[in-house]
Amino acid sequence: MSLTKIFLSAFVLLVTGVISTSGLAQETPAARAALEEFSTGLDALQASFDQVIINQEGVVETAGNGQVWLARPARFRWAYEGDFPEVIVADGRTVWMHDVVMEQVTIRPQSSLAQNSPLSVLMDISELDQQFTVRELGRHDGVDLLELVSLSPDSEFERVMLGLNGPALQLMVMEDAFGLRTELRFTEVLRNPDLDDALFEFVPPNNVDIIGELPARQ
Image (cartoon, rainbow, N blue to C red; front, side):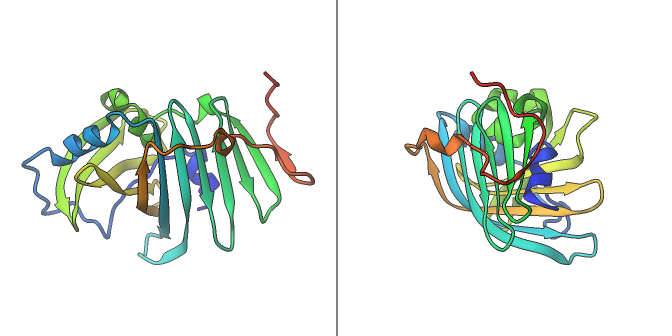
């Protein structure tokens, strides 16, 4: 599964398998409290990430790394590095997905991709219970786990888990309906950095294939 596929599927991340929910304590709502603390006053975010995608047999299909930037209210940039680089940019109206190797840019209205997204919840915690059923899963491997199950019947993923250590977000993982699991572990997380607006702007390079309609100029 490419990073483009992840964002076309409403950006969601969840976990299963290696992080088993059996036997986890469910006594204190530590993860919910940590998420609320993390999100309070959050206007921007910058982080590095390591990503693995694991199939039904528990075999790692792909691994990579990159960086992500978020800015309130609805802008982000996700840069996937390595042998198959991709860049996804949301400018508030449009999501641009650039597959560098394929020399292809896919364009989607942002409104059609923004529903049921944990990334948007990070920036607006008030939407949490409107978009998800939330459940504490206790502490495991040094993080407090919070499970988010989308209330939308159209969600492509079974559930979402966020892993926090205190008010620090460290883990977001997903599993789709076909048993593929994507795990992202975040490092070098910066809250409210001074981000350049140019991070959230995208101009398609010359000589790329365009899929979708270019947005009208404002």
